[in-house]
Length: 379
Length: 241
Ligand SMILES: Nc1ncnc2c1ncn2[C@@H]1O[C@H](COP(=O)(O)OP(=O)(O)O)[C@@H](O)[C@H]1O
Ligand SMILES: [Mg+2]
Image (cartoon, rainbow over all chains, first blue to last red; front, side, top):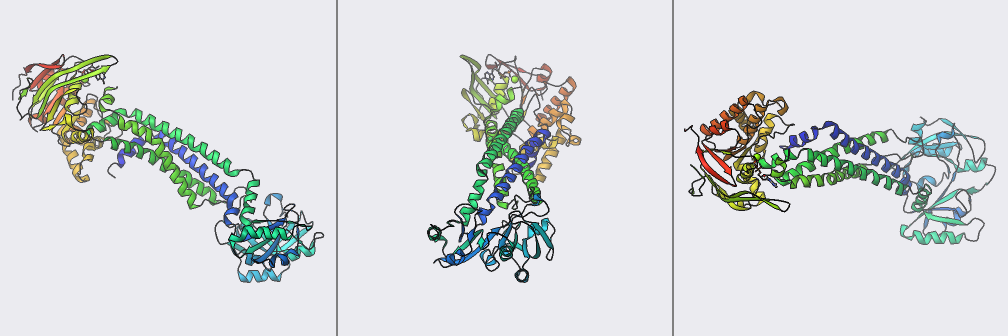
């Protein structure tokens, strides 16, 4: 690069100022990346939801159970190809802070319904053979350094008593977004031991042959159980996950507002700095033009300087964010999917450069418009 | 030959005809140059003198294509620069004019070498060729041992020599020097004048210099005075060559 040293020397003349400006980019991009990660963590369930799966809940509330007898009636509906069910357990492992979701699952159908969770065959067979067997996600296993064969006591809150389970297998997710922080055990074991609501399940998940028929099937299912003691509310898995996210408040809007404010501030800071930098160098820029450098060259030079600051600062911010997320969920279980995807890094880099460009354009234009004779006359 | 009567022939290197420049300051029009004529041949060394505000800098700016006249024309080596577009004029300056300023106007964050190299960045020369040219220019101004110094590490006289090296490195058609010794002590000023004299005498350059200093003007082959918007009274300095 023939002009590399011109750009660099422009930046290095006020090292502290350049450093602070790059620092603003770093802070803003770090924040952007973390906000995007948090949003992704909330959104994760929506993103991974199967398009061909419906969730059937009790119409009254999510904590009201549904009769086990619905299983066969659901299976008989034309267009429904598979049915499984599960139950929320809500137990505590050692300490309330160690939160992770526990599901009592139907051992016969759950694995086929959720092929994104991969369990080795031998481990699944061992799970089927042990009434107290459990399958845990690899993130969860890693968190508590559990391994196959460990015996895990969990204190029931909804279902009283201490429940002990033998870890028989570890599942992993097919995609990075898949939640591997869950704990599964056998629903038949739960049903046998619990003292109430026997023969009831938490919710059903059904697979449908044609995702385009989802709306019609939702209606069919809910009409089938209308006017019964346990009416249902059916939704696509995606809509179900989205309604969960909504319960957390309008995270999306919040993150968007914070993000916009941060970038707007960054734009002002960087734009102001570049304007000062250009004003200070009026005479030098005029000399460049007197020597024969074109207005376009001077324009490009100023913009290139801003872009270098944006790229370096933004790169540092995104790099730090990546390092931060590599350490995993900082909340200890609330955001199991705490991951900075390449798409966010690319978007962040593009944003940094866009802000750099916008911040540089006005000072660059004024530098380009500068008249040599006027600039040299000024002392 | 230098003429101010507007009758120079087509062989003059620099030819100004009816050059006028009027500035508007509020409602008041300031007529700085008023129908000025000038002919300068290649190899001439001309000094312009005149009271402050008489328009010397304005004249140099017009001759160097940094500004456009209100009326009249400037022709250099057959090209009428007063008819060029701004873009063409910029490229023309790069090829034909070497500017030397009173305040040196070096870029403080670049070394002497890098400052001198600037005009060469506009050419197609390779890095090695650029280095060779810069080193030659440094040798001419006698600063070969200071090439990696920054301007603040140089004395005023040395800074001005870097400024001159920058002006000559791309081998321009002529040099325009606006009070090149205005900020220097006598000794440094004399060294700069020696250098300019050598550039004209030994290297065959053409130089036009504005100065307040009679001793400086004496070095030039021709001294012209700027009065009331025109050049008057050719005083031929004693040192004929
Ligand atoms: N851009 C401008 N606008 C208005 N007046 C100007 C401008 N540039 C120069 N002048 C005026 O023109 C006159 C000549 O200026 P200048 O060429 O710098 O004189 P000198 O170099 O001989 O001191 C001065 O009166 C100056 O104030
Ligand atoms: Mg002047």
